[in-house]
Length: 472
Image (cartoon, rainbow, N blue to C red; front, side, top):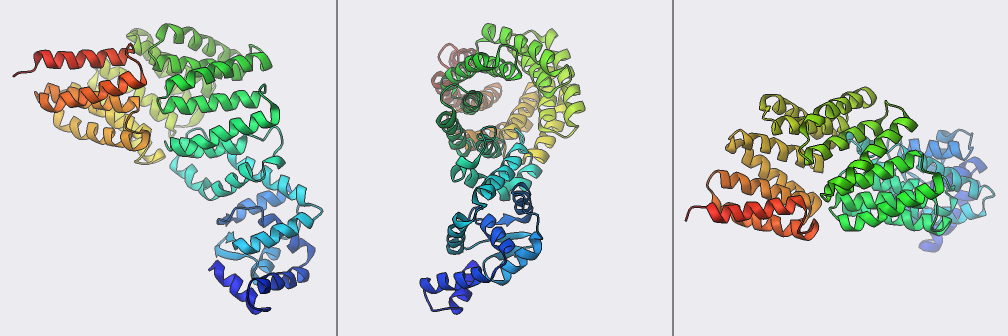
């Protein structure tokens, strides 16, 4: 126990808090300079388990070239550090306070802080946009230390690195569908960038875009749009019209417009982003695959089915080549292609793709994830189209419950699930169960999407049809 450390220190001198400080000072004076430097470096970490790999990384960036493990053993022996498990350590809160005081007396204090920050930035840069369960597990112990970097040691982050800790933390939560936990990190990223650089800077534009992306994920489309527009205009001013960041901005704004049912505004932005991406990044790039996929989604919404399949197939093949067969984006492409086949009545081709996508998302992202909820909903829709109602209903119910848990009761995706379940009940003649679901879905759509959104109009028509045609 960490408390044992204080107890042992107290025995080395007079009892009480002054005894702890006195015993600490005795231990400190007896340490070699190398052990003192390591102890000061360790004091930069959060009050949480510290993986040894992070210590080695921070020491490397701080140019500490002595035997770290040997000096670590000395700190454990002197009760200044506790080994929790193999290669995992922690410092007691009071000892950390005393070590941080010593850190400020050290000539290399700033160098250690910068090294610590660089190590944490390296962690943040390795967190992908959609982290898998394995990637989440690998980075989980680093998260408290990454948060320490973003909040306490922000001043020691270089200009190029400033927003990376915030972005890494936000991706960690955002990628799991934990949007509420991701939001403050996106907000703090924007605040930190504006404070350091002013209102006009690429890091400000990136932070605006990231915050808008989260709002879009939450179904807060009206809040996302001005941020996307602001980010696009700023990137064009600062970076020029021909820059990868501008292509990303165009794609993001197009995706938002598609989500809002503004199809005629989305298409030219998608095409512009795709052409720019190919020019700047090459024909074989994950962004190009994403853009092909998004353009196909738009065409589906417009009923342009003959143009969709080659785009989906090209995006799927590219993602497999670039990302490997086991990747969340590959699962998304499989799901989208299955959705097209289902819409075309090609049920025998759609079902194995849906099942493959669902299994892959569960393996990679876990059972509780927005992508899994999409898979369940879509597989349920396939079964409903085939009249396999008893197989469709539990999938719809599971997807609806998951979306409410992960996204909140008033997310547009919840309205979609409510609508689908209502449609299933209507097909079975269970009108009294269908009607309240349509009503709830329509209320969400009107509030979140607006009265004239295509989804809202469809819901309104479905409810009216039910009321006209249901049996008394």
